[in-house]
Length: 161
Image (cartoon, rainbow, N blue to C red; front, side, top):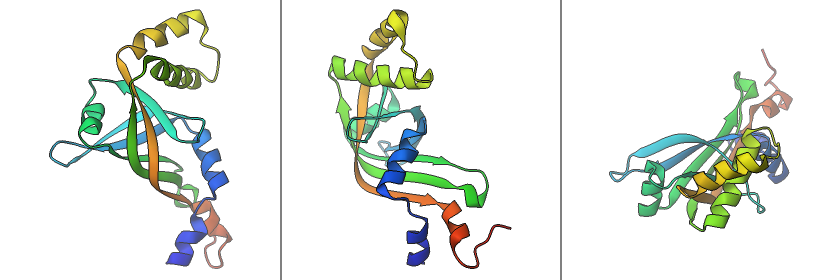
């Protein structure tokens, strides 16, 4: 099975391209009782290729991360089996509480959500107001797993049906 697993892995460049081409990440944190808390957020990649997002300081995920910084993230797509692709990241969340850094993350997220357009003065004012209520999160990866099932079609005996 290891050969099969390795056959569908994405290269580092493919992972970077995949993460850069998607908008939403599923985020898992640990609740007080150890149960998973899952949510979906819009994200950007920071200058080091790490997933970064912002969220309300009072949100359950931030309360969880203050208690335990372990985090899991999933970016995936595809409908049919041979279309499934994804990147799963397990690691630690670094909370960003500096206003200017939070605002920078929020500006990038808002611009990306708006299709990459310049937010203008009105949009910047909205981000500024939101940044005062939010915390930034940067995901420091410990383990990255990836898959692209379309690569299975290149293996003998694995043709699409």
